[in-house]
Every structure is written in structure tokens, then in C-alpha cells.
Image 1: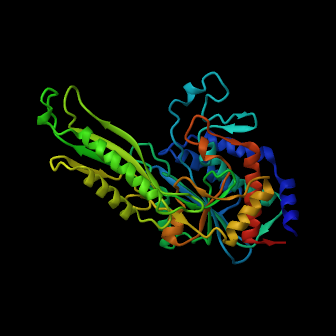
Image 2: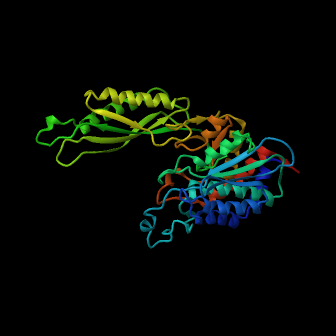
Length: 418
């Protein structure tokens, strides 16, 4: 059977309405970080309906479960894993923003102008549902797999809720792989939204909160104080210069140049010399850059900019993920056969899709590539540019193309038994 024949067979077997209703049901299960169990219950129901084996749930924190399972192939071979996070960001302000329209309920999943709207539509329930619907499509097309395809859905990827957003779910899951409790895959597709492009590389990042402390004094006698805001001006100038220097070092072919961005400044008082201010920054890293070295460079730049020994500075790194300071950059070779096969599958499924690009975001693929040494890419329907916003939506045709594309890739990777 040729590649064209298989794709035609899959398209003919696709039940569009069933696939769309799966995504609408997923959006309907509110799963803001911390409430992942609400969505996991639906996933377990659908995974059992698909006849998966070895379905397991395990809590990575009280009341917060991961879930995983597999479809066994008819023989030994390479093992493919689809994985995604079950949690979404908050919906504060959504209802007011869309009040009086079909979009006002962030969990109603209305279809408006050929697009499915709602919180989590793109980030990343379209990816999860496309991967599950792909397995259902293979069944409908009468295609039996030669080797195993596995699915895992983990929580705590998103940040923003107090005490959450530290990748606790995937840390638990990869720990089970390391201990042999879960069979290690040979290739991983993490279903973050890519508009059906394939991302074999991702940025790294860390966030730094810098607290500058001087000494307050009444405004009439400023010479008695130590102005923290004035010191912050020198610090910001030094950091912007450092960012320019970082950007000149290297350019990655898929994710561009590194830099830092100052994202916030707070300080000042009432009619007094400001005693304290805090500024925040985020640093983008390229594959191969050390988080420890990059953080040390920032700290050195800040300390060099503060010339008054009576002004103190402290650093905090609140967004540790696969590294105590932040998230590591990651990449695999873009010319790997698996990358090319997935790109070809998406290109056959929808015109203009299947490009090989770089992820302008950090997510959890680095737990596989860097920690486990297992190649991983990002690929799924949805556009990261509208995620986390009031405009979160997924194009219906792109979503359905993702279902067919994933099914086609599963065939290519796992092989079939006629």
C-alpha cells in the first residue's frame, strides 16, 4: 500500500463529527492548573473505550493525577509515545470580554466561523484529542499496528496558580520511566500547538527576580538615603547591554538568537528616597547554553553596575523546571528520519503544513531529550499565539488534518499488520 493510498484510506474513514465532539468535550472539562482530575476522568473514559491496555492513574500531588496507557502492537518494534499536559491557564476576565456573544463561556466550546473556541482549545487539548482520535481512526480504517503506541497525559505544566507550575506531573512520569515502572519510548511527540509544523528544537529560559535594597530617607534630606531606584537604572542599563552582547554570540537556525527581556519593575515609596525595588527578567537560551553560566553572567553584570557598597542585591529564580533555575533548551537533529516522516504526514494531510521549525516557547520535551536521551518533537494543531488569551481557538480543518496526520505518522513509525 502506497503512502497516498494510506492517506486516502484514512481520510475516507474519518468521522469528522465524532472527532470534533471529542475536542469539544475536552474543552468542556475545566482543568485549570490544580484541577487536572476533571479532565483526566474524561481521558480515562476515552482511553478505555479505545481498548488501551496498561491504563494507569497515579497522583503526582494530592488529588492531581497523571494517566497513561498503550495500544499493543502485534509484534516487537519501536515504541512511539504521544504526551501532553492536561492543565490550562486561568479564565479570569474571559466572560466579561465576550459577554453577550457565543464565546462568553470559556468551556462551552462553540464553533464560530469554522473555529472551536475555549480555554485549552489550543494549549493543548486539540493536540491530545487529535492523538487519541488518530488511534480511533486507525481502528475505523481497519489498520492494525505492528509495534506499540503509547499515550501519557500529565499535569502541572502551566504556571500562574499559587504553588503550581513546576512540571510536577512530568517529573513523576519520567521518574517512573527511569525506575522501569513505565516502558521507555523510542520517539516522543509532545502535542504542544505548532499549527502542524514540527519543532525539533526549543528555547531554554529562566526568570530572575532581582531585589535591590538601599536606605530610605525623607525627601528633604535625600543625602541621608541610598536610592534603590537610581541603582536600578544603572542595573537595567547594564542588563540591556548584556542582552545585546548575548544576541551577538550565536544564531540558531531554528530558534534564532538568545537575549534577555526585563519584564517588570516595582519600587518607590511616599515622599521618600526609595529603599527597595524589584525588577524581573526572563532570559532566552539556545541549545548548548548553560543555565548556570547564563545566570552567573547576569548576576555579575548587576553587581558590577551597583557601585555603592551600601546597596544590597539579592537574586531569586522562581521558575525551576527541568533545572533548578528554569527550563533547559533542547534539540534533536532536524534531519532525523522520524522528523521527516512526521513532516511529510502533516504536509499530506493539509496543504502548507508540515514545516520544520523551532519552538518559540519552553515546554517539557527536554525531560526526554536532555534527561532521558530520547528524541522528542512538538507537533499539534493550534496556534501558540492565541493561547493564554481571550482569543484561544483552533481551526476545525487544521484539527481534523492533525488527526489524519498523526494517524499517518503512527502507521509510518509503528508499521502495520495486514
